[in-house]
Image 1: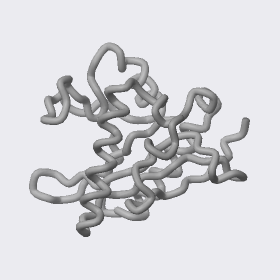
Image 2: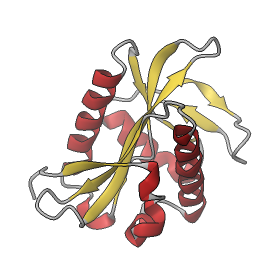
Image 3: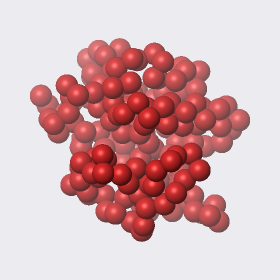
Image 4: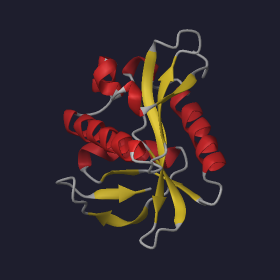
Amino acid sequence: MSAAFSLRAVAPEDGNPFERYPQLQTLWSPALVLLAREAIDEAFLDQSEGIDCGTVFLVVDPDKADEVWGLTGFLPWPDGAGVLQRVGLRWHGLVVEHRGQGLSMAVLEDVRARAHARYPMAGHFVEFMPATPEHAATAEYFERVGFLRWGEPERVEWSDVLWQEY
């Protein structure tokens, strides 16, 4: 398979993509799918109030936009003083049948370019993921595609496990 795909932005009025596209329920563990659903709902609520929350994209077949292969996106990630120095990768994943064929890397590069175009002042594109043994393979994947471990794992109020920035 070639790395041909399209990204289709999801607007708040489209609703949460997990409700419309059941195959997205298979991207991660049930606990991570729940976190992703809640994060997207929160982002859409914030966007409806005029807050910039980046963009959620569906990864779709370039010839059949209703055939959804995955989910990705980006979000602004200001520091404690509100300065935008980083942009975060938002819930990047593909359904099993589209993994292992170079598509994920191509999607990452497209998302990174779109994030840089929207937030040129942000110097870093980062991933934030659980720092648990069951996510070690995912951490290795992100390291293989150029993300570097940054700092120590940290606690967040919305999760029971430590999370690591890459």
